[in-house]
Image (cartoon, rainbow, N blue to C red):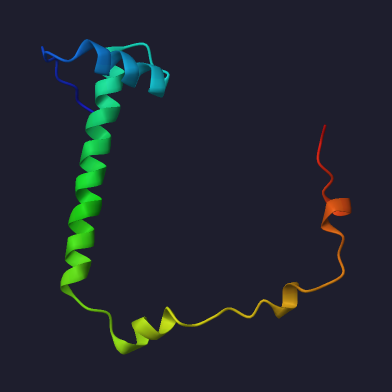
Length: 87
């Protein structure tokens, strides 16, 4: 990916907190993550808005009311014995 050098002014406290949260030492890394997250969120919002423009079909709506058959999970297996917690 091509990178571009930029001079920016940022709030030092926000940058410091972002670097700590992300576990990165450079301002560039923190800003790169922030920009990626901004783009991702915008795309998700755009997709959600697009989905709300088209109502679900009757078949799609019915899928939300279907309950799975969990009966095959009802057995006598002692899962605690099968997967003991490691100390």
